[in-house]
Image 1 (cartoon, rainbow, N blue to C red):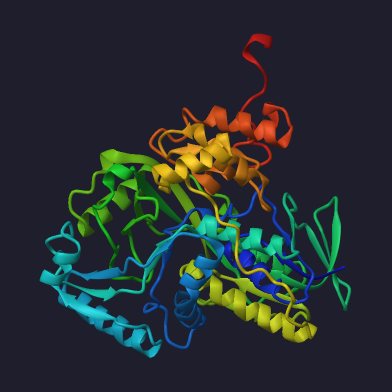
Image 2: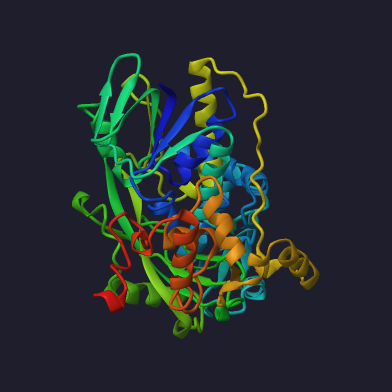
Length: 479
């Protein structure tokens, strides 16, 4: 019997799980995919919003502002990259200027620090490649960029270091309310938990319907498509650059990544509820992204594009984050976690853990370890540090991914940690082989060999991502 079962291992569920382990609470995380961070968390803009946009008095406003304040502290403890680049919302008309004023007033109500409306000259001083048609901008210095998938992996790893359990490939198919506890089944295995936290992303409404005949909300998928440019485009922008927001969202933006790439997108396309897996890209929508981005930033080097992708946001019928105990006793909903969900995750984790610890009368855990073991990044070391590391472990002297300078030692470490990678994309998310210009064309087979060796399995069993995404079926000479 677990005290709490968290359904969904995206950044929200992961944050909650880690914060719950600060208390004497037995926690299990249930994830339907082969790995954590496989939904919205792996395909978004990777921005930590300053918090001026979400309305004062809303859950979005409260948790974004709070989450931004503690984001650096969390990333430092979990050894996750985070850079406060600042953000700019650009105005192109007198009407846009009124929007900037409204955003600034709202941000000041939420106590977002150091918001400033800057003129065209100051804007161009910060971003020389800004469109000549931009006349002013709202500057928010506390905005930043991070790696949402690595943050999620780090949250789960640290939760497991502190006693939480993770069950992958556990697709929840039935939940039964036993009055004092729940049984949760994937059709093969059944677990019991006193409380359930529903952090199932675009499927949160379907999970809730398993225990509630008259749910208070629905979740619709909203697709956004992106371009990712090579590191050769580094420096084209230095901050997070937005247009003025609209009813469809914050708009198509141009943003640097913590790894030195340039990310452009998303568009905003509402889908119906039958399309909760529709993460394909389309030429028409990508052309729209390119058109919108070119109106914001000049001379974007789209020829340096190395991949395109799409992600789904969970659009709630309520228009706000759904956070709290539901009308079904012991069932806690965390739904509609679209932007600024990533920015809000640290604060949501703290809040939910405190609420559940209170109803469980749980005490703080003695010996909780807040820090994640540091991940060595060979590319970032100096020559002396590299030589010492190779002397200690020769695997760090074998470069597997030349685009990103990733060594065998880093890959082996990523496999054997708690919440270690077992798939090609899982290793890519953890240490970036395959994230460079060749997109795994050269290093992919070598990563598969290392996975097979370290997991003691046949290479044919190694997957790209999900359980059915096998890459090899046998040796060419034997077929």
